[in-house]
Length: 378
Image (cartoon, rainbow, N blue to C red; front, side):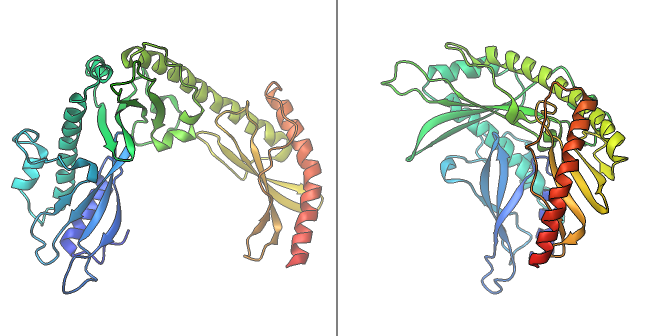
């Protein structure tokens, strides 16, 4: 985003925060509180990832006194969050350091301040969850406290039931980054389990099963989608400490299968070269896409292949793009994605490529006709 409308010192702090935070913090609702020049921006809302969702904090600087640290307004569900309280914030914490050493010339201090506040928010939510009058939640807390970096959150409100939410980093005996040859990821990929426990009401005799959802770092989707994972069933009487090892074992196995699928996709692309020649471009790491130049008589066109992570169980989607025809926007004419063609995951890779190229031979005639008709309409 552009920072020109902020006072320079505030802009420097905000720029450093957004570019160096490990939490992928975002900014929204930028506005001004300046009475004399409303074009000068000095307040905004931070969207901070927490417990696999997000919390929103309003940050209020005073552009008339830019040397002062900002004020904060926390969310409506966190009225009791008082991070400077001695019962929450220990001496020598990041928060204490940022406030006691505040210097508006130091562009790093806003990030330090946010990190300190977030640390205190984690402690505040743990305390809230620990006070919940629910035996199951208390037991679950006692069984998973040895796991590191677990986040907890108590949610309630007039229009929603009370719930306790856990965000559990899953631990696996392997590094996903090291499994992928030529891996471009700078940060280690992570998978989390979000567990939501409805608070048992007095008139309810038995607790219901928690709601479970897998969440991963965004880059992991190129290799493996947690959306496709079928979670192990949650059995009656099961606790989180029993469930997690089974889930982690399942994920390890499926990730290894996803890495093996890269080899299969690469073999398929190589098989296509026997019929289409060398690709114009291809994804060298995950083999999720490739583009080839093809011809049908004098008609040249490009075939784009998009491979799902479930290949070859799921066939690739195809897009045909003309090299001779443009639409009203002066863009190459393209077909919508094609997925309806002969395919069997049981075929050998060479047969898959051969049958697909046979389909393209026939489809090219229809595509040329489609392009010519599109040209006449314009």
